Every structure is written in C-alpha cells, then in structure tokens.
Image 1 (cartoon, rainbow over the protein chains, first blue to last red):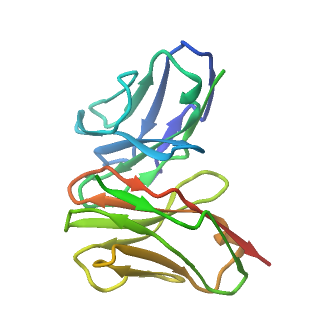
Image 2: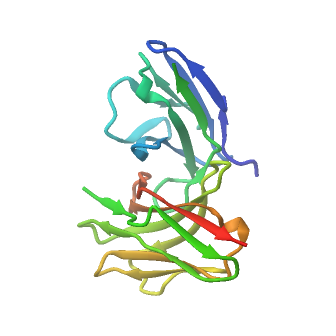
Length: 113
Length: 114
C-alpha cells in the first residue's frame, strides 16, 4: 500500500497571502488529522476529518480551515499568512481515527516571508 | 485538559547500550492510548510503540519496550542494544479513546554515539 502523501513538500509564501496544502491518506483510510510543528510550540493538533466531516478541532484561529473530499483526500487552508505560520505541517491518516494507529505523511514545510 | 511532559530535552547513549526516555502525562480519562513516535532528520514521523491504558502488561516491540505506570501517569520508553539508526527525536503522545487527536510532549532528542 502507498503511504500518506502530502503536496507540496516545500512552499514559500509572503505575509498576507493564502495557502492550500493537500494530504492523500492511505487507501481505505477515512480519518485525516492535521498537525502543526514549530520549534517553539512543538506539535499541535489542528483538526481531524472523518467522512467529509470535521470531527475534532484544535485551538487555532479561524484563518486555519480544512475540508475532506469524498475520496478521503484532505486539504487545509491558511488565509492571511503570518510569519508565525512558518512550520512543518503534518497530516496523519487512520482507518477510523478511533482506536487504530495513525500513519503520518512526510509533511509540508511552509515558510512565510 | 490533557497534557504530556517530556522532561529530558536531550539524551545520549553509547551504541549497544540501553537508554530510557521519560514521559509523564495528565488526564482525568480512564480509557486512552499512549504512544512513542520517532522523528528522524527526514521529519517522517514513525510509530515506535503503542500502549492501551486498560492493558496492564507493558508493550514490547523488538528492542523497544515501555514501562507503563497508570497510577503514576508515567510512560517511559526503553531502547535496548541501541543502534546508530535510533538517533532521532522521540515524542511521547496521548490519545483519548474514540478521538483522532494526538497530544504530544515536547520531544527528546536522542544521540547515539559509536
């Protein structure tokens, strides 16, 4: 089985712009979670989607949003980018997201200048 | 709110020796999972080991084992016969049952010396 894929792998944006990151889960997995990793704040949960519905949400401002498509692929969007949004964004997929393991993608490195 | 604490920012171990990484957590839940993840320089997060809170027996995966003390809310990782490929950042994580939300500790960077 192919693993979790994330595109793009690297991205450079300017303050004020918006960005969309994509995550394709492992085939058959219906749960996708997103995490932000920064040196200062560590790994923080953004949100989780299951069957196209947001099931959990972390403590991030409304500039961070996401969605999931019928094929379980997920996108996250960050509007009005700030310098502090520079981070590694990781997504993880699991079959149901309830009791099974989460498998992580390689991440998207976002740099905001 | 649940929290996970790793008090050792950095650890080092000699190749072939044993090292233990510490983790404590705080939760009022009784049904949850605990994990150790490894993140090498490639940044790919890899699951090392998983423990279900209702199981008293400590989980073991080859050279990796945990010491799970539920009452003390402690979950340490022991790596035996350390190898150079074990060098990475290790994260302890908590997940309540029936949720996909992982709560991570701050991480411990493990250096393996040849």
